[in-house]
Image 1 (cartoon, rainbow, N blue to C red):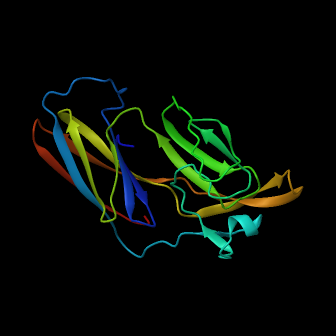
Image 2 (cartoon, rainbow, N blue to C red):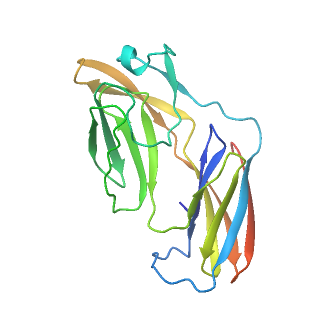
Image 3 (cartoon, rainbow, N blue to C red):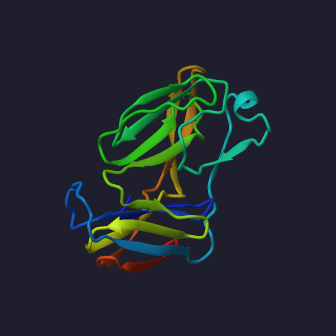
Length: 217
């Protein structure tokens, strides 16, 4: 999450940060004279509207409060709160099908390939979408609700700091087949994630400050 890597979440103004050194592969070393990167991520302009999707299947279980829709916020933990079967399908840096037959049960899988993983429910619950990152090093952060982040014990050197945000725009609807109901359902397909980059120089035992201003463009 950092070439340094930041991840932003729309609902809480959260960003995820990660760092890369000239595209080199990360190696574990003992850091003797590390520095600190602190910064903020601020949004410029009108806040985008998080898209919503109708809850069209198992509403008595998946929507007991009768909200009718769910927003498509897509950074989340993998745990079902519903007493119905969900099958979480992953593609991208990891490929799994994880069944969630019981509520409040956390299921873990080890992921060895770095990169972005897309998640969706293959049980016909098309509003259930998520994204996660598999990161091969400890130099990443998610901003707090005020947009602040910090990376500590960073080896001295020049880095590219990257702020990343999952896309909040639906590009199109993609048809798929729900085996259980034998019905065609529409699943949202999002535009690519957004990234913003800045160079930062870290000196031994010193603090570097980086400020991102991000927006629709």
